[in-house]
Image (cartoon, rainbow, N blue to C red; front, top):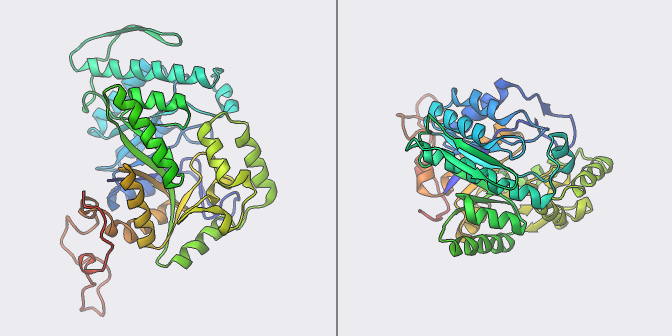
Length: 396
């Protein structure tokens, strides 16, 4: 199991849809989040992409120098990047970071944003272009280890004699992650990527997607990994967690929700359509309506595009839900919470001890001598995590 955190390059706050409690996106703040994730033992971080975000490659480059082990899941955007240039960027980052790059292939689903970036292809055309892009990207990098060049002539993209002189550390190339809910997305995932990510739908729906992509990949003689993108709201008690969820959307007004949902409805993203359906386009507002599956809450999606669901509950409940998804075949969990700095600590402290042993080995205190935590009355050491009661889950 791999647990990733999130770098909030589009802003951070204690409340969704309002400037109250908001934080400036500065290098100092993003560095705090990244260093916290690195220190706490998260496998890596997802850096979002789009015109509402700071550029992910610039951000990742600035953060790799202040972290030690953290991997960076960074987007390539067909239509914005050319595959040969993206291959050089990836190889350089991978070499300079010591092999800590992961690639997030993003096709995009916001027509207005895409046209503003100069991409005018329809849904089918974008997936055709994405398939050509990632094929060229992979082949250029894979062949670079043997000093070979690559030719490709496609419908949307072509290269002749494409060559990479400085190969990345990871072979044959940094792993490629990708998410999408349409049939075209599932075909692309099955054929070319290393890991398929889904947004946080109920387990039964996620199981259908995993089974479909896995079956398509098997027909091509391939196996791929699976993961999920979720927010988390975890507190020491279930009641506290649900109060925190309600607080997160407590400053929202009807106009803000309506404007957000109107914008989302114009997108041609199947994944966004599925997210909107979970809260009926913003018409569901109560916990009873928004808890769409045990401990799975759709409130974030009232105003946030993309991943719009959160796991809400006490540590044992959240760990149990993660184990439920793991049983489906998911081994990568890309998580986030508001505000991202505090919630990175909260999730690690409350839930990491309940997760598989390999994650526990990364907890603070395993590489240095103690004590850890505040000494009691100048004399007594705090109780060790290993002696605390925990939920037994998969040890693989």
